Image 1 (tube, rainbow, N blue to C red):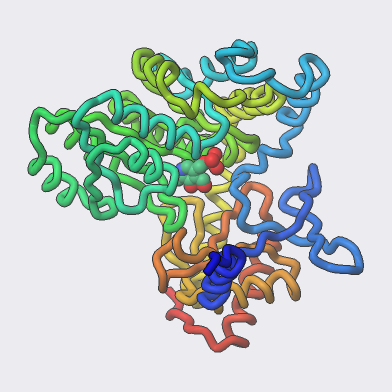
Image 2 (tube, rainbow, N blue to C red):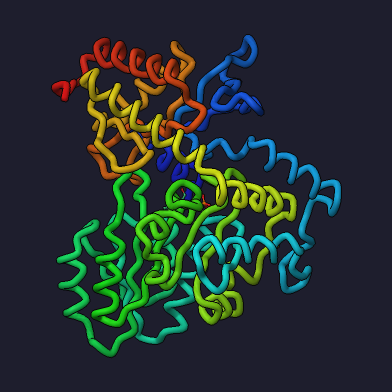
Length: 408
Ligand SMILES: Cc1ncc(COP(=O)(O)O)c(C=O)c1O
């Protein structure tokens, strides 16, 4: 009997539908200069105005006049693409400038650009561990899929420590051959709960057990620290972390990823990582936009301060309304639903009836039973919007007879 491939693929899709976690992507265009306002194309009678509540363009930098102008200028000056891999096409001068800017941001000797944060994690972690024979990687259990992919592709031994649990990490370090190379991999801000890693204490353990440290600052760069250098800058521990990794696609508003580290570490990744070497480098237009964004956020705290203010305000409103908000330590505001079908239903009502866009978050991004709505208020979400969102959620919670919490 011949295999029915189509049937197998359809069954895989059906399983997602049955669990209520089939992903549907919204069709939108953002309105430049009026973020978080956008147009949604899900309707036959023309685009409908919506407010975006879940973008990771955390500070609205994707529309900042300096960023847009820099990209326009670069496009007119040097054209659209980079011309291939850096090995073949060379470094565009924009790439060189941005790597200097990022090294300076993290007070490191060097930085290296990748086409995304995902690629930077996968390429760096998989390469590092291959260069260190017998390396053992200690990975926080909530690390992002890109770090997990890099660790898996390194082929080295992996030990998973309970999330932010230093005692468990120490137990694992102590039980490992003292002579084996070791790497502790973790994030600074965890994007689904909005909690923060105890970086200084992790570095203490790294010193004690002679381990390297790798910190993913994807959800922190641009937003924490006096110059946007992330939690490592805020907590004054950047010099203690071996490799800091970040994205250029979230708070910096454009696209790309990077690592910052000592020059030998950067050189070894540049020289050995297939995910860096064998792919066309970022368009100079994108890099020019990021340069403007990083430079702006190094000197301006206005966006960071407004983001923190609005996140606090939204948390307070939701708590006051008795909605089950998770008290995150950061700008991320998760609202617990605990069921994928209900989470999708709430998001559908918000969009259809209130013009509010928030994407439900399901397994495997979060553990089953902790499905949620994840709000990312930024500098441009004003008080009226925050009040409107809270009122809409309160009405829907009542309509669907969902559980409330007691007001704080
Ligand atoms: C913790 C973390 N690391 C890395 C990435 C990947 O970054 P990028 O979107 O630039 O590929 C993400 C993306 O959401 C992330 O959440």
